[in-house]
Length: 597
Image (cartoon, rainbow, N blue to C red; front, side, top):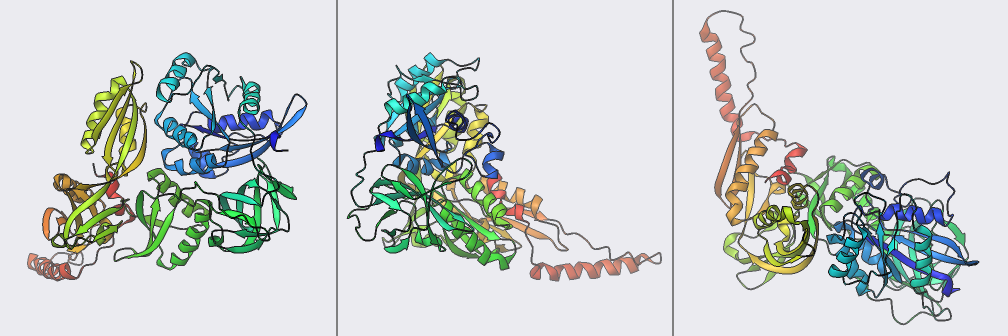
């Protein structure tokens, strides 16, 4: 049975045609009829369909007949964007092989390289596939040379396909069967299965997508989840299918399937955990699985304060579907009760906020994203903080350490000057520069994480007209000359608007910040001062002029002194109001930080 199974993933840079190729493979294997077929079959979320990106890795089981023998292909489609590389690592941990898709017109991109290294770490059999060969700009020979030079993968028998028009798909399926090894599990050993994905179903509770390494899982069997040490009964088993899951009585070694244990609480099932048989448990859980590390942190608060519990439930359910988010409750003087949520990157943050609002019908405010800093205090102790408002006073701190990343940037030669200027402006330190070909350059820089979480990717795309690609890996902490920039509205510090900035940029950022805040703070009946300060020292100020109530409206003629008397009375009243006025900030004010250049 196992020799007829092939478990493989599809990896590529964003927009190189992974989801289209998955559609073509599904169609070629006859898993769905032409009438049921739709584009991006495996991208099931509204946001995925709208944005044209894959957010969740999806699995599907296909049957393919070759030489009269029916083979089982377990296909795992993976996301291509840098923020979702965690999904890629999970998918590859469950596969024996991977299709490396490279656009025949664009060539190797930064994310292609990053995903290949994850695959090589897992000892996967790699099949290079050149996609979009029917495009007029396609140059397969140049791209093969690039793959060999950059990645070191032999491309003599690379496959040339077009996922859109169906060229070379049959040859690709044959190559998957011939070149990717069958799984090597022991069917008679104790049950050992890896949970590599999970989600919440309103009717069935928490569901786990598992890859069985040894033994088998049967319906009605009592199993033990090794991480939580809890026992459960297997209620239903299904094979994943593009349209509707297919019920089965057992999932054997080498196969993937969906297990329902009737769990109502989200915490009982963790991605990366091992399921084993209760009566004859395996000794060792499956290792080699890394937990996701959050890089970007932001506060998320409900606009209606009584929706705090709803937000907690929503995050619990979403965590089951996307185990890479982490969160803890926090309070803000300006925004009330909410959560400090950890994300893998800016796109991840956008997507999670949008999913919380759509899927759980919530109205939310997100504060500006920050990263984790380490602060060494005068007594030698070390603290970690994600929220700038928690920074200790300057006289208690010895130094602040900030996280750095190794950024890999691939750019056409003509935009090299623009890219170097941008990266230098972001405090980047050049470590490597390599010409892959006369037209394309690979750059490696060490950049502070704080500089890339805001708008670095957008700026890189705009200075290179969309041609550069970018990927990053965390490389530890380095000391930085950093200060906390506070924003005061009407004399009060708004904790949700505090940011940590390099000392050299504090003055310019403070000026820019208050200038933009002035446009957003609504006019009151009294003057509102907006100030940027470092500690108690104010470095910049703007004033929102007061909006006068027309107190002379009731004067219709008569002596000018009557009007003057009313205006003087109003003036005196405004002086009193200054000290007691409370300003309501609009939601846009909290996102101003993102727009500071």
